[in-house]
Image (cartoon, rainbow, N blue to C red):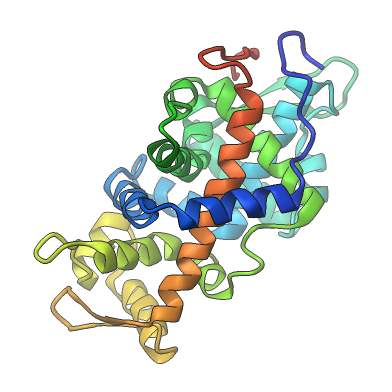
Length: 298
């Protein structure tokens, strides 16, 4: 391990994550904290097109997620060099698709590389901007968990790219051990597979939670402008919800109806995410107020 890291980084047992998630969902403030998460996610999108689109589709997101995991494993835990070849070997996309995404990250100046000692390939190194984009939802969930538990974990993470890299690394370890947290939530997963689909889902949920007169607009034009995609793409996503009887809009940008089971699935998903990231943050920040430090990102 890199000097200065916390050695107690075992993957939390799945049962512990599930119990923590259940405790969050039973909290009387859970609904308001989840609503705050949704509002934050649609309020503060990082960067400009095509950056938003690049990070908000599951397959493309996972390339950056795994890149940061491999980088942190190398930098902080003496793992293998994070080369393109290694990244191509572990993802679900084809080698060409992965290479194209990496090329896009380079073009957007979200990725650098360096010649690693004793390695033919170049080490891929995420910039702080890339790390911030990939950890955006994670930190929003940790802020929601802080709100429920009266903690201040998020401020220690949100300004420190090295800690964010470690957060992503430990989340990846959990995924390798137990599988993605998306698996039990097919309707949430459906939206994550579409360009900016998860953001549209979160906008719908924000509207469902909002008080009268405070709901975000769900008009095609408003969502297309907010998430930098076409109106027709937004229309297809909204049509998916209506066809499956998950939710409908009134044609004027307002939520007309939403299935209770759809809400419950999203809330179970949110509770699972809260439990997952709160446990990792607790594990990383063992002593209150005491951050462990890692080398900075490249």
